[in-house]
Amino acid sequence: MFLTRLHHLEATSSQALVANLVSTDWRRTPR
Figure 1 (cartoon, rainbow, N blue to C red):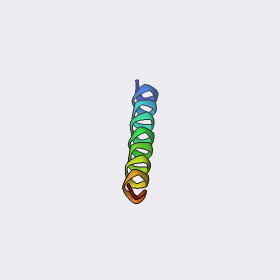
Figure 2 (figure 1 turned 90 degrees about the vertical axis):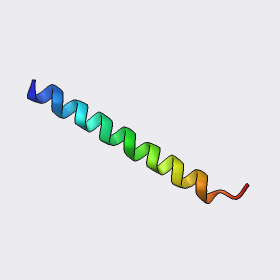
Figure 3 (figure 1 turned 30 degrees about the vertical axis):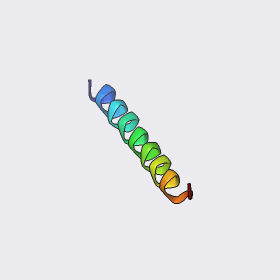
């Protein structure tokens, strides 16, 4: 159970990191 929770936390944090990177990159690119 603990391992599953840790894995879930890792997945969500990585997803948030990717989303943050994408959003910042999208904001940086001029339209």
